[in-house]
Image (cartoon, rainbow, N blue to C red):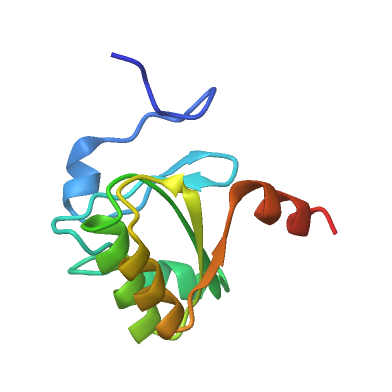
Length: 119
């Protein structure tokens, strides 16, 4: 099985994760355990992001109908700006994209998003 940790990652104690901490594992990377589909459900994520002055969340990854979709709705309820990179997320479907647009999520394709980052 291949690791998903960043190069030179700092080891995290699983017990700390289960207690709700968000340990630093790289220069600008943290790890978090989430007990349910939504990343904000019974976690310290919102306080952590606010403490770091984060106002925009970018969603990529897997299985849009479950965890990303739920986390996007939770982020929207907390007034975060949201970007969804459609072709970097599995399980995306047209109605789901329409629903995301209807709640103010900005939809990108990877190439378009990267180009905009470099402007």
